Amino acid sequence: MTGMGYGLSDAQRVQMLRKLMLFWDGQWFLKTVETFGLEPAIDLNARVRASFGRIEMRTLLKVVHKRHADDLADALRLLVTYVQAFMGEGLSATFVPTGADHAEITVRRCTAYEGAKRADLPRADQACVACELVWNAWLETLLPGARVDVQYPLRQGRGDPHCLFLVQIHSQGGEPCQPNPLHRP
Image (cartoon, rainbow, N blue to C red; front, side, top):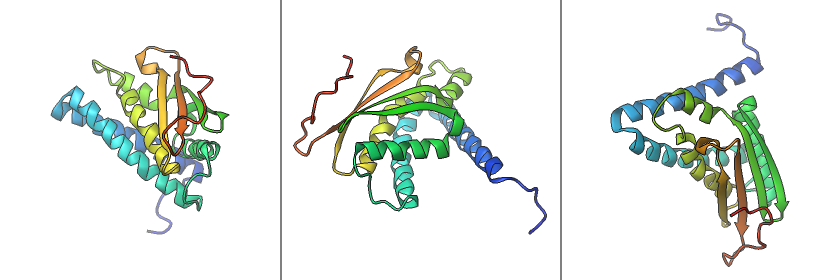
């Protein structure tokens, strides 16, 4: 089949694959809702997303020739790399280390949430429910042996203007290394 197809640039291929991955995920979710109902679909989607999140991070580590992240700051750099590759402009987020074992992640645009709103289901926070599991899965895969605590004080799917995730890595004994100065109860 050489020479018979349309020539797509690498950028066009990447853009198309990004969209198709999200569309595939959205269609899978909608068909699961049709088959099992909204609440079981939300639960199943969150579990699958966390499981796939571990696969995503193991794959990313292999691509960058690492066994694990060096520390939380390195884990954040890996997450930025992944988000840029997978979501491109579809996710507008900042990843800020606020200490050796604390970070703040702010998401201002999320195409998964935007797609959930377009589905016009009784709830539009299904992407947020999945998000609550995937961040731990990502960080625990990147930082094996660490206990990760992610708090979600702000979420677009719950009516907030943006999402805010507060990350805290716990020491070997399970205690937080230092209180997170940005934690907002």
